[in-house]
Amino acid sequence: MEVVCERQRLRQTLGLVSHVVPSKTTKPVLQHFRLRAEAGALTIEATDLEVAVRQRMDAVRIRKDGVCTVLARTLSDFVRDGESEEVSLRLDGTNLAVASGRDSGVLPTGDVDEFPTIPRFGEGEAIEIAGTAWSRMAGRTVFAAAREAGRYAINGVLVEVSGEQLKLVATDGRRLALTFIPLPQAPAGRRTAIVPIRGVEQFRRAVDAMGDPSSPVTLALGEREFAFRAEATEVFSRVLEGEFPRYEGVVPKDPPNAAEVDRQVFLQRLRCVANFTSEEARGVRLEFGEKNLRFSAKSAGRGEGKSEMEVVLRGRPTEVAFNPDYLRDAVEAAGAGEETNTFRFEFTDRNSPGKLLFGEDFCYVVMPIAQEA
View 1 (cartoon, rainbow, N blue to C red):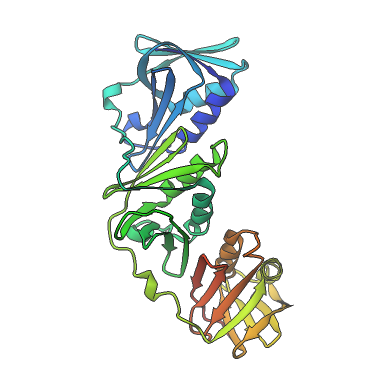
View 2 (view 1 turned 90 degrees about the vertical axis):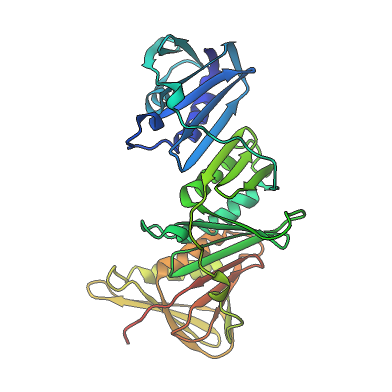
């Protein structure tokens, strides 16, 4: 194998692929890239057995075809620190010779046969959406997935295709985020997959690496894996086993009280008052009045903070307390835009979950917390 690449482009490619390389593992080969030069392109692969990435680089000069595995960290660091605009990679027996201008090195290679098999992207039952649509949906849900080990089915994001809709749902048991987009064409029936957090985030990185993030990407839901293709990048994630909670019953149906709230003003007031909370007393009290929303919080050692803003309330004045981090996460994830400059805050009473609606396609449910009088 002998290849000459543009250094900055190779650096970006290695950076994208290296996100799935584990820092610690009992299988040393997983800390390697697999490099394959053939058909006028260099393909770089990596996997941690949960998520796998295949990235194709076409703008390279292939002087000799070949394949090898090499330590990902060492190659990435060399390419990052090289001085020249180009990098050459040449397989010499069991070593990979690398050079960039006056910098050069020799890296030992591994056994290619030990590197795990990475799937090929299948066209069956695939759907196509804009890359920006995926990034937006992922950003609105992945933050709400459970991070604690051992939560199994809720340690990921539910991807559901049904009724000509693509829907993403995530929950950690204390909050739930749900967003969807219409699909002009969708497979018949209902198909679901629970994608691990790392898989969802790697799909977003693939979109970010696209020349035009609004270009189409392709998704394929399988029984054991979820595949994602964006331009020259293919990402594969195993799907989590277990049954995702029946989220439809968690979303409150037509709460009697609702307030129209300015997104930016709400964030500013919430952050200000949250400064007076502590880890032991992580709650902000919201008092919805006919024309105003009052914020208050207090904790031992940090004192007491208050603020207020104007709102339009439909229903009965109500007081309810929430973890401010959970509210802030959702409002920030909604993003700025014509439909999200204001949001609808629905609630029943102090013991019932709050429901935040951002436009027509993003719903967030959050449980209240007990608050001392």
